[in-house]
Each structure stands twice: as C-alpha cells, then as structure tokens.
Image 1 (cartoon, helix red, strand yellow):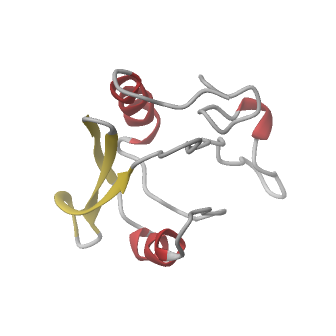
Image 2 (image 1 turned 60 degrees about the vertical axis):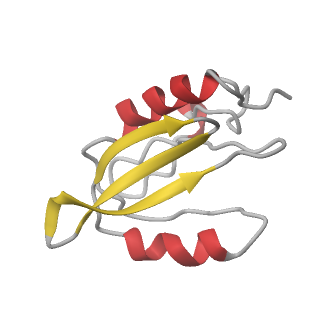
Image 3 (image 1 turned 45 degrees about the vertical axis):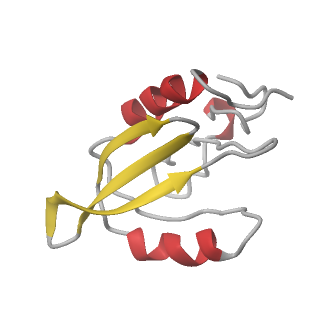
Length: 115
C-alpha cells in the first residue's frame, strides 16, 4: 500500500480542488479517524462551500466559506495522512433511491487506490 508523501500532496490538493471547489458539503457519510475529533467537527461544516484546497508541506487544507457569506473564508480542515492514511472521494448519488457510486470512487483509500 502506498502512502501519500512530499510532492504527491500538491497533486492530491489539485485533484481534490478540482472535485470539491465550489461544492457545498451536504452530508458526512463516514469519518474514520484515530481520534473522534474529525467525526465531531465535520457536521459543523454541513452547508458550507469549499473555497479552496491547497498543500503546505505534507499537509492538505480544505478551506470552507461561512454559511451566511459563502465567499468569506471560515473554517479549514487540516489533513495529515500519517502512516497509511488517505481519503476516498465517492461521487454523490443521483436520482431517487440511488446509492453512493463506489465504482467510480478515487483517492488513496479507494478500491484500487493511489489515483
């Protein structure tokens, strides 16, 4: 299993920015973390729009707008993958009764990972 390191962070920031920038967080399907802080913090970002995603060193930042002024920067999510960490982006389901599209998921933790 490969671990995201160094220059790969910029690549992953660019991939996530392309997928998330301008989108509003509508749901948290699952949030695995070594601490419960992530799972507890994410619901506060529901309804917030992603303004930008960038890398600094070996960390990724996802910056959200505030609900009452979506173009003003509010909270940021800081991601550090650690040993064997990663993410999985699963396309949002379309249509009534549709389920998450795991077949087209991508990211280090997606089936086949390392995209």
